[in-house]
Image 1: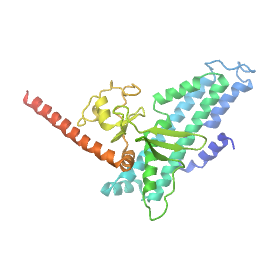
Image 2: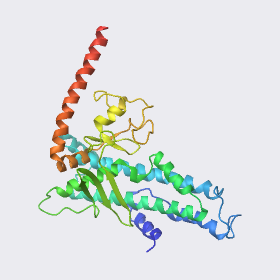
Image 3: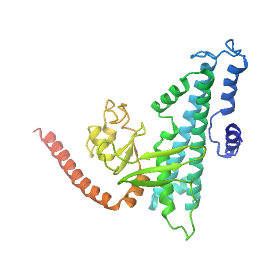
Image 4: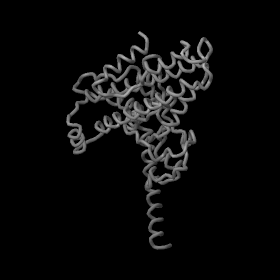
Amino acid sequence: MKFCKTYEQYMQGQDQKKLPGVGFKKLKKILKKCRTGIHPHGNGVPCPSQCPVCDGTFFSSLLKEMSAVVGCFNERAQKLLELHLASGFRKYFLWFKEKQQRSHVALIQEGRDLVTYAIINAIAMRKILKKYDKIHESKQGQAFKSQAQNMHIEILQSPWLCELMAFHINMRKMKMNKRKAPALFDGCSLRINDGKPSLSCELFDSVKLDMDMTCSVCLETVFDPVALTCGHIFCYLCACKAASVTIVDGLKATEPKEKCPLCREAGVFEGAVHLEELSILLSGSCPEYWEERLQAERIERVKQTKEHWDLQCRAFMGM
């Protein structure tokens, strides 16, 4: 079965959830005009690198649809993980807010559905951009993909996808009523090679995700991991150092001019996401390393807190 038909059938099955998607069929029709001679530059002649007909509707439509898909995925994944991590009164408050109490199995199934939704839309975007470049004999589609990454609307770049993968592995390790928990997707695992962990997931249609869990600042396994809005993951303390702020002030106090240590993009600290599921996964998989880092972090936090309040006291007393 061709991917277009598979995608259309999948999205039709999501009608009740009212999930946004990529207008795969509509975009293919726009591109088909270039090969059937409807354009003035048809008749077997490739479109110019800047096609006035395609570029006027194709990229604007795709950009709008990609933004809607990523926004929907991030919002639903955040709500799911918030419900899973909540405890005590907050959990009951969230259940009341959602107007239903969900079992662990229901949470896993929803996580599975969200991952499938993210991946199939990522594949749809990749295929339609590849088709654009093939028809136009250009690299405009690849350039648009890079632009989407810079705009943070590339769904595989979302930190919530990383959190869902960690959520799956964490739930898989739990004993749920002495029954095997349903898997989110095949081939998802945390691999540790030479002491360096990485999240790996083999998906359908030959898509493979590999996420290195090494902080590029301290070159160690990420501790208390945080994802910047550009998608790169660091230790929270390393991110604070890179942002020139203290742990007491936090990343929200970062100046907009500060840049990601890896990609050098500015303004990526304020919307940083704490990866709590990933933190749980790594602490259980590397207990000795985690305890060692925990002790070192406590010393550093006490030191920075003392320096912060000493400075505040001096400022108050006019010293």
